[in-house]
Figure: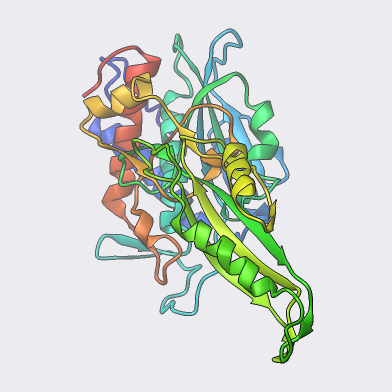
Length: 373
């Protein structure tokens, strides 16, 4: 591959951008053609690993995660993580095209994972190729193509993050139309149980667990957390599942319900859980407190670089691998969030090229300390 570096003011030429774009597009087509459902990503991991090897870049792999460092890695420097995932959800029944056949029509690339998050991943890989051979960078770069994002699995980014170096901040590739998601809601799923006492429904016997649950459900519906996030708004709680009773003439002694809680950067998951447990009588058990909200300061150099490029900031209601890392992170990538997990998923070709261009311009302002517009 032609070395994409241009020492003239760190500006990538149209020809070099085309080279990077074509490399990214070919890689994305290859990834689409390989089934890579969450926890079944071994073949796409191999494909990504082979891509790096063809470009003379040494890689590391653990389970279905692949990562690589820039050529002139300096352990004394902080590191920027470029991350996206190569697992996909399963295609729904609405597909009219072969989800594993990459097809280009009317400027769109169709295929499972094209938008979420293949376009982001290959754009970040192309960006990494651009910076890989550069000397005298102010930061190291590490590119991590990770697994199990769609299921928030234990064997994805969370598994390998401790091996990626002294990470100062991360860019997590998810479809944002290349705008800056500077905050993201966390997620807790709560399994709640209201306890009563069984009895015959025809007599004044027992304590109806459903009635007890209703009181707590009403609290979940109406309670407003005092602190409201600048970007994410209020904490949101939704009761989504309920089960109780065995037959019509028995007062139920147990009512179980599930609550979906979207936590903002104004609270930790543990703080929200504590407030809930103080206010409801039901037993409340979180399935996990791993998926935390995130926020990167708007004065961060990477955010300021994005603003200088005319990108806008916002808070994201959806959860990504940002929830699993302990450093400031920016969610940003080509594609549109609303296309994710839809039938006949696609990404526009121009979005991939634009994504590479903006990523390079964004990082150039940070790693070179220069404005590249």
